[in-house]
Length: 268
View (cartoon, rainbow, N blue to C red):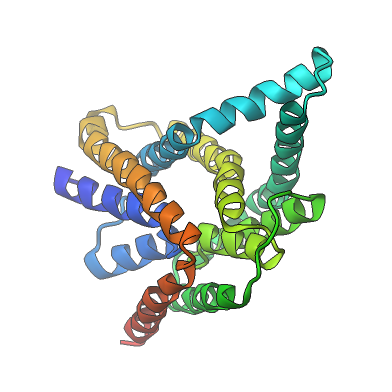
């Protein structure tokens, strides 16, 4: 891999990881069309860590509250409304992470095989398209989160491990279908993503260490990591504005086009 390929894949990862258009689907398609996929797991580790950092920086203040509030609530006896709210938030994130953990641990081989199929990726992009368009029928009206929300949004996140199923698209949409308002749906979706992204990073890091990291390639990977971090952060800013503006479904036009092209390409 050269620096240009590193930058291109980093840009694809950063722009598509958070937008509801499926980063995994785009990496499958990008690899098939341009032969840009990296055979070195180390580069994937770098990209996942970069996108984790993008979310961490974007939601830094909320993350601090999620960490500190349960500690104050349990050990310091604080019963303030804010501590109670963020303690509940932390619990819902823990609950919502369980489905992704189960799928990641027990269906790893099946998921890896799915990443070799351009046709399946195209079909899953059609599913993402349908979900995005259906948000036009959603009637979000509440900012409070319930246990049911954590479980169902967590299941949506687990399903999104499949290439072509957008994680942000499925989780934000599911929250909106459940009646959660747009801003809260956006925030919960990405705060919920942190354990999943970090878990994927740790699993890939283990694989990279087992395969012996090619330290000589690190300088080639760094530009891609930086591009993924910056473009990912910008994507979060743009997506938040689009979701709050009620234009989330418009991404379905793009995923529909990409889905059709993927299906055609898979039969070419």
